[in-house]
Length: 294
Image 1 (cartoon, one colour):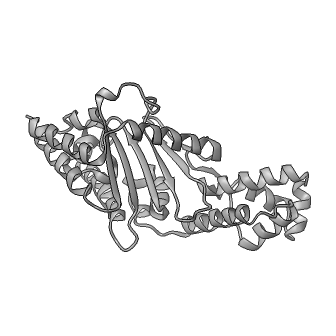
Image 2 (cartoon, rainbow, N blue to C red):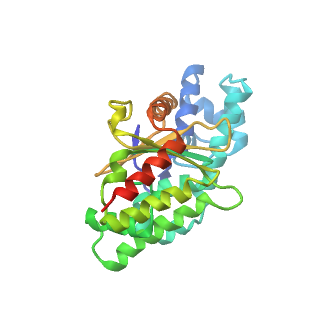
Image 3 (cartoon, one colour):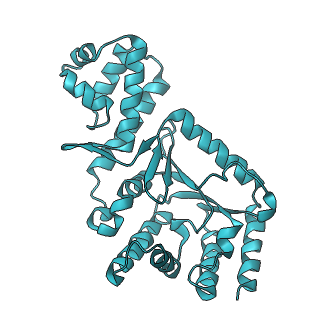
């Protein structure tokens, strides 16, 4: 589990880079090779191997292939998974995404860049609507209540960033979104009843998209696996790429990059989804809450 993006001098450690580096380090340790020996295999310095294993630099496919062979890794699935991670990391590092131009996107820049290359996101939310499903008015009310941004222009900047992110739900290769939301988030009147009714109507609209699946966990479901807090699981189009988990707390951002831990979050999500209402019944509940809101 790693907190935020790490930097050391001009070296930037990314989520995908750290994940790839940790796997290469694990393979090297298992093979009994030293960093100096690994460096010799790819005609580099031991310093470069250190940077690779700490996720500080993008990695070339030839280096990964040579190191896998040097470490005795013959399974094509493992090699392809590492190559897929490397490609995603290179794309993420060189991306000149719109979020890099917005001060209001800085805190979520790493997550947005991952969202931009993701194939699917599963998100569990307890207190508020998933960012990809919010209306501008709902977002604005949330930002005002949080009190982090006070200048009206800055607040509108945050709203603009969130609305821009929603473009990933459209286009030729839309993001697959699977959202499970606790009933409490539907009833909490963020911004008042008018804002909430519009927000609930927006949920009903977006849930009709073929790439959006929305379920509601009702109060009557009782205890469940995800009671400890909200999170999002980011998955990639490459079948060999391992999921990463994003947890945005009040004070910081946490990334879960370990394969076993991220798989555990997937299990938590699936178990909670099974306790939730079916999509059709979820929409009926949203309609009922909207009609009763005053």
